[in-house]
Image (cartoon, rainbow, N blue to C red; front, side, top):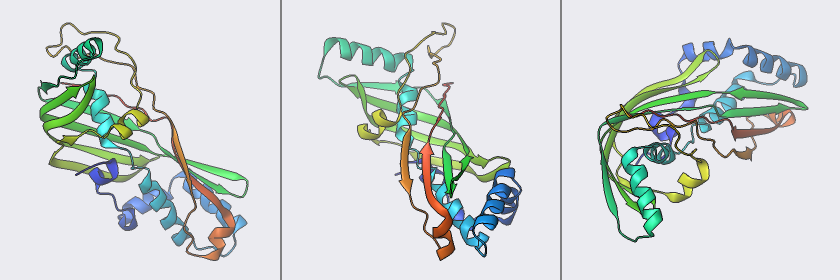
Amino acid sequence: MIKNLQDLYKADFKHLPEVVIRDLEATEEIQQLRRDIKEKVPGSNWTHIRAEVLLEMQQLLDIKLQPILVESWKTHQDVDREIYIQNKTVSDEKAIVSLSDHEIRSTHSPRLNIKIGDTKHPMRTFIAITLNLRDVSLVIQHGEIKEILTGTVKGKGFMQYQNATLIEKEFLGFDIAGKIDASTTTDNVVAEPLTTIQADTPQGITPVPTPQVTPRQESTSATSPTSNMVQFIIGVSIALIAVFLFWQFK
């Protein structure tokens, strides 16, 4: 079962094409990083260091898929109505809501911070996905989406760093049926309240402001292929900040 964007993209940054490596090397930030490393860590192996940086960038794709879907579905008129009714009546009854075919779009801007001595090198990436969903039926209970009863997804997406496209994929159809993991849904995404109803939209879809995502920051130490790397990489932290989601049902 696909749980996050790393699974969705089937990312393997250990084996990027040469053209991707060239585009990455041509970015101003990478060139500055190389200069700082050369100056502060003479004799260091850039090829090994670059491999470590790419592995850390791959980890930026560890963005849960279910919260993207669930918070999008909550903006649907039928889902929003059922959640409102259940919250008002405090009922234990379950409801099944079926959605017509629709599209969800999501963008994210996670950042990798590399620290060399007192100098920080923030490396912000851009991730985008477009998901086409069919035959989605949701189980709603206690005012929450508890289960995806049926549903299939296909789509496409990419991840970029500056002008370098690190990965670009088309997603073949896959099944998304399963229980909702509430621990990942509510912790990662906080939806804004509904604002404007488009009366002329057949599905009664409500456009909403971009949800705010609670920043999640975790520190990891880069695995050093040489002793020199230990001397200059004080810490590599992955910060999922300024993650922006937007979605659009069709």
